[in-house]
Image (cartoon, rainbow, N blue to C red; front, side, top):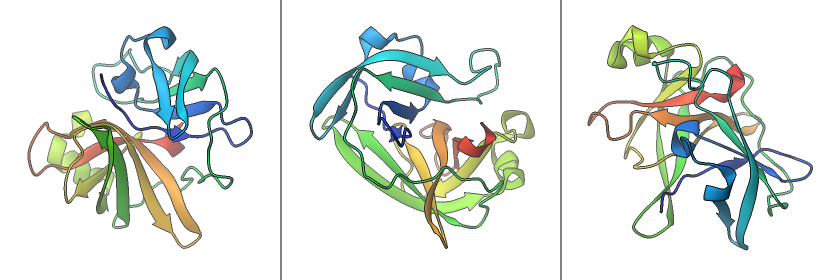
Length: 178
């Protein structure tokens, strides 16, 4: 069993979940289910961000999971971040980890892409990335939220970095890039 966290992004039908494409890999809708507090919901479709499998450099790491039925979701969904940079802001990451399917949360400081490239190398970072130093790096995939004066916004979806190198920033796909 593999766990990944996702975000309900469909404000009307609650039938789409945004998650990391790397966490889906080559699985098909019949291989996956989405679980929430009410049970499990099968998938009918998986849509990957354009170019996800075309580049050897991690990026475009987004997948949309279409559910066969609506999922219960809050009445007020968080907006995706329109801002190009959150460097210096506090970020919050949510992820699932095993052996028990438990939800975890970590906080850290969002980095500029220049600082992120200094850590991972310029060839590994592009405008579609956003990074964060976390107090406890996640062991699995999940979304990155940043609190703005207007409230929390979805800034990124986990891409890579957790567990790759201790004391290194984690790299997310910037959702405003798409």
